[in-house]
Length: 446
Image 1 (spheres, rainbow, N blue to C red):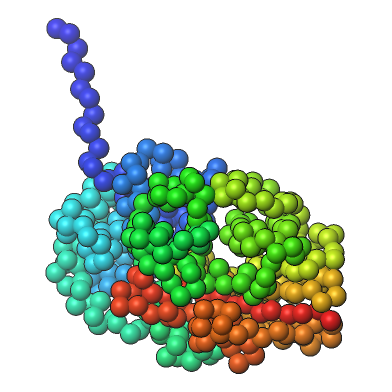
Image 2: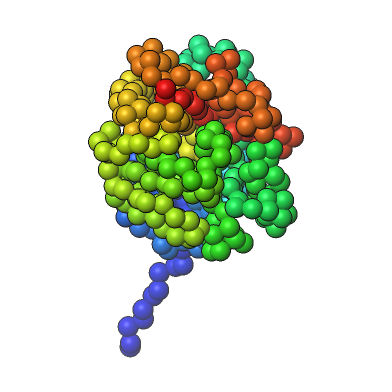
């Protein structure tokens, strides 16, 4: 008799997306790899190529939701587990997190969330023995989890304690809690448009913020949205779009954008009429910046160089978006909360001060320096500028006015700098509110 060939059973729909989500979570929490590295570029997870657009979007949202609510998830699961989360089988831990996140915060039927998590551990040699445990815990989560969320409300569990302590010390505990609450919501998509903001907001089913940014809740690949291929807009958080505005009229000015990639601020400067030199130390990031400028049909000279060593001088302006802890971007990059350590800030502040000193030498007399960081840490913002002004008598502050930032007086500090918080710009729909945490200061060289 002829040999009968049996085809393997087809993969259960959605299981691959959850398996890749588990791998990426492990990459963040165990191997300390950023989400961006695992989702894009040469080191991206190879399995992403096999996912449909829908499954890829599900996987991204699943990972982001878990990292955004990691502290609350940990407390809830610890309440539901008699002996704690298994430590000898990472895939069992991931399955519990993935199942619970879907049950508690995502539009996934409870039975599907439980079944797919159980299948995930069954297919892993080390975790298979925990299949019954995962099944029981997630079923209990479906029954009791929302009550446990209510119990955890107000505890700010989803921010590492060291970070919450810093925010409380600088902004006050009430504001720190407001920040933590804002970071718990999935953010919108912010776009800087070349023109006709109202028309693009209508076309993209969004709204125009006071600053002119178009904000939309559309999801999926941005490359598929109207206007992307035509170069009519670029992705840029509304707060990140503010520092370049501090230069005022850019026509004919020669501006150097230090640490420029991926190029949102470079695009703003070029769109405003400046003669821009964009400097970044990473060849790969500069290549991406060039691609973005090409799509947008904007011109800028691009240079691969360490900002502390770039020899340029005589510029009308320097925009220094300095490398920082990025704690202001946690709403869009929730992995930052779990990858950064307090010790990182001291190392970064030393680099920021070297870049600031270099930026001063690149300005002509009367030139303008705009310094900014996407950090909520005063060491990387207010303190850095205070140190520069104390040590360099050639520089003076030029305070920002409410009129320069669309009337948002609440983001202007007593010294006249900009300080945006995730809790700013509230909205009845939390997904349409908030800003990245940004600091910006404007200085003039005498």
